[in-house]
Structures are given as C-alpha cells and as structure tokens.
Image 1 (tube, helix red, strand yellow):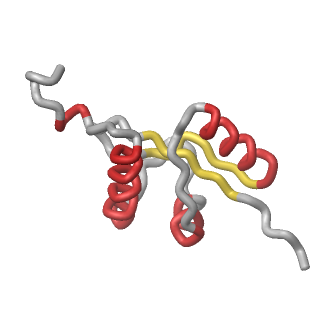
Image 2: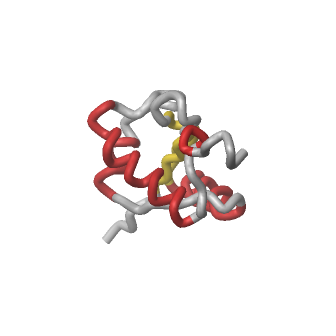
Length: 95
C-alpha cells in the first residue's frame, strides 16, 4: 500500500481582504511548511476535505466565497487560543 504524501497549505489573513494562499506543497515541501509554521507559533488545522479544496488554488489566490465560513471559524479559533482579537475588535481605549 502506497503511503499518502502530506499536503500543506498556508493562508494569510490581513483582516481587510479574504485570506489568500501564501504557500502550498506536498511531501517534503509540505513537511517544511509545517515545520516553519510550528517554529513561528502559527496555528495548524488538519481537515482533509478542506485541504483538498484549498490545494486547487494557486499561490496568491484568495479563498473562494464558499469557504469563508469554514476559514473564518478556523481563524476565530486560532485567535481565541492565542488570546488575541482582530485589530478591528480592539477599542481605542485598549490601544
């Protein structure tokens, strides 16, 4: 039985535009993307169905509207576990 190659997709979200693909790869490249994410304390999410859809996108592509809810939930969870809030949610008194 052939071992399945790992796949990794990195997204960037600037809080103004839809998240976009900043890195993607399979095999050793995927392992390196994951390694870099871990080194930089970047939240990792494993979702085979979602990764298959994201893998169809090209570097620089924004995620399609159909994925907004799924990606928004992941981003929100990542913010919560890091104790962060989007810049747009910080009041002027807190800055």
